[in-house]
Image 1 (cartoon, rainbow, N blue to C red):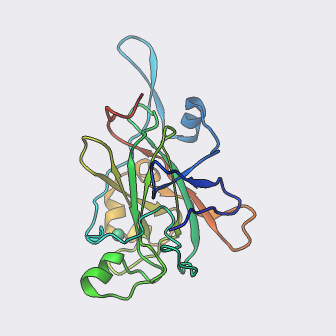
Image 2 (spheres, protein in one colour; image 1 turned 90 degrees about the vertical axis):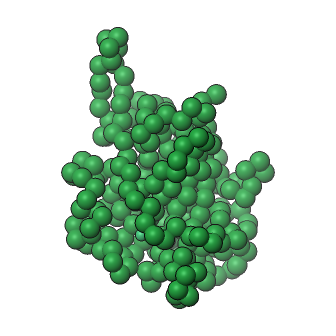
Length: 246
Ligand SMILES: [Fe+2]
């Protein structure tokens, strides 16, 4: 696999200590207040000591589903569009997917392994190829990983998800692994997709406010000449991993 450097995006450079995971440098830095502004769902609560402390709405846990790959691809980096050193990219709407992993107090979580998996442009999972020999885009990685640094940020280049039989709402599966904790999972949905309300899992998530936490816009990337998209999805865990702070 080769380091991935998207146009008009911060340059993810190969980090030799984290290889083969790619990570971002020179990302815009957010102080905690601006971050809280971005996370409009945040509320203020009064603690027993009388001081105000911020409490963010937790990202809802959503089931892992049956298609986590039992056989991981040889390439598991954060660029799902290019497999190993192939020249042909995956088919689909290229999406630059970013976000931060935050703990229950709104602090960035470092050393979290963020994993995503989703269907190819025709609605097949990598796992369907493994189990059922289903046709699968050979140029799509189908699964990727990212190890967060001090900022808690993650980055993937992938495709915009499409619907597949049994699910009306296109989605990207997420798993977050932190030391000493069970794997935590959720799903990211596409804001405005007409099938969302007909999707059994989507409908079971909760009220509109809760749904908004896992439903994000996929918008055209500025200055992209080839129609790339961006999406941002901050994940607030319902706990504070003990080992994430120096
Ligand atoms: Fe799924």
